[in-house]
Amino acid sequence: MSKKTKILLGVTGGIAAYKAAEITRLLIKKGYLVKVIMTRTAEDFITPLTFETLTNEGVYQYNTVIKDKPMLHIDLARWADLILIAPTTAEFLSKIMHGRAEDLLTTTCLAFDKKIVLAPSMNKNMWANKATQENYKALKRRGLIFSGPDFGSQACGDIGTGRMKEPEDIIEDIKSLTKKKLKLFENKKIVITAGPTQEFIDPVRYLSNRSSGMMGCEIANAFYDHGAKVILVKGPCSYKEKDEIDSIEVKSAQDMLLSVENNMSNCDIFVSVAAVSDFIVKDLSKEKIKSENISNLELEKNTDILKTISQKYNIFSIGFAAETSELKSNAIKKLKEKKVSVIAANKVSFSEGIDNENNAITLYWGNGLEKNLGLKNKKDLAIEFVEEISNIYN
Ligand SMILES: Cc1cc2nc3c(=O)[nH]c(=O)nc-3n(C[C@H](O)[C@H](O)[C@H](O)COP(=O)(O)O)c2cc1C
Image (cartoon, rainbow, N blue to C red; front, top):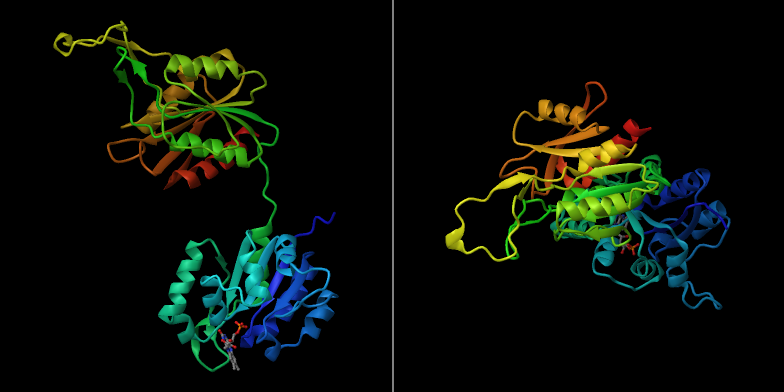
C-alpha cells in the first residue's frame, strides 16, 4: 500500500484558479498523490484537461457520477488524508460555513473528518466584508486551517489583503501539516504522578492542596503522543488524561508510592508532578473528632515519593518543585538532596502555578544547567517540556 500522503485539491471559481495548476504540479513533484475536484464555476476559469494532464487521471467535476461508485463523495473523503481548497472563493467559504452539500466538492467536504486547508482568494473588500470575516472566524473556530490570504496587488488593480498565497508558500504549509511527527519516546516506559494527595485526619476530614492535576495529565498526554508507554498514577482530581493512557487512581501519598513501586519494572523515566501533601497527621483518628475537641493538629512529615524512587531505583527521574520564593536555590537544593536527574521548578502564589490554566517552568539539571520554558498554557508547556526532556535524556 502507498505511504504517500493523499491530497484532494478542490478548485473553486476565482481568478486565481489558474494558479491551482502550479499547486498541482508542485504537490506531485513533492511526492503527494493528488486528485482534483472542480466546481462548476472553476471550469469557466481553467479547463479540467489541464489537471487531467498534470495528475494523469480524470478530474472530478461538480456533477461527476461514476456508475460503479454511486457514493463517490464518501469514497473520495475516505481516500484523502487532507483536503486543500485553492483558490477558495468567498462563495465557497460561505457554503462550507453553512454545511452546504450541493455539488461534489461541498458534499465531499461535509463527509470529510480530517484536515481541511483553505487558501482564500478574493478582492480586498470581499475579504474585509463582515460576512466573509464572520465565516472565516467561525471556520477557524471549527478547526479548519487557513493558508493566507496575502496582502498585495490584486487582479482588479486594488492593493490589499485577499490575494491567494503563492503556490510555493501554500505547499510549505501543506508540508508542515503533513510532516510525520518524530516519536521521541518510542518504546520507553514512563511512570507519571499527577494531582494532589489526600491524607486523612479522621474518617471525614483530610489534608490536601489545590492541585488540579492538569499539568501532570498534560505531561502524560505529551509523552503518550511521543510513543511512550505511560502509566499515570493520579490523586483525586477532575482533570482527565487521554482515554488511551493507563491510569491508576489513588488517594494518599502512601497509596501513590505503592502504585508507583508496583509499576517500576522496566520503567525508563519517573516523572513526579503530583503535589504530594508534605504533612500527615501524627495520630489518625478512627472516630470523627468532635469539633469542640480540636485545639491542635499534630503533623509529621509525609512520605517523600520522589526521593524514595530516585534513590531506590537506578532511573532517570524528574521532580516538580512548586515554590513561592527563591525558585532557583530551592530547586538546586532539591536536585542534589533527592538525587534526581531534573527539577522542573515553578512559582506558585494564590493566582499562579497551581489550579490555573497557565504555568511557567524552569528546568534545572546537571551541574548548573538550566532552561526557562516561559509562561504558557499547560498543554503547550507540557509539549515543550517533553521535547526538552528528550534533549536532556538522550
Ligand atoms: C471574472 C470573475 C472573477 C471572479 N473572481 C473571484 C475571486 O477571485 N474570488 C472570489 O471569491 N470570487 C470571484 N468571482 C465570483 C465567483 O466566481 C462566484 O462567486 C462563483 O459563484 C464562485 O463559485 P464556486 O465557489 O462554487 O466556485 C469572480 C467572478 C468573475 C465573473
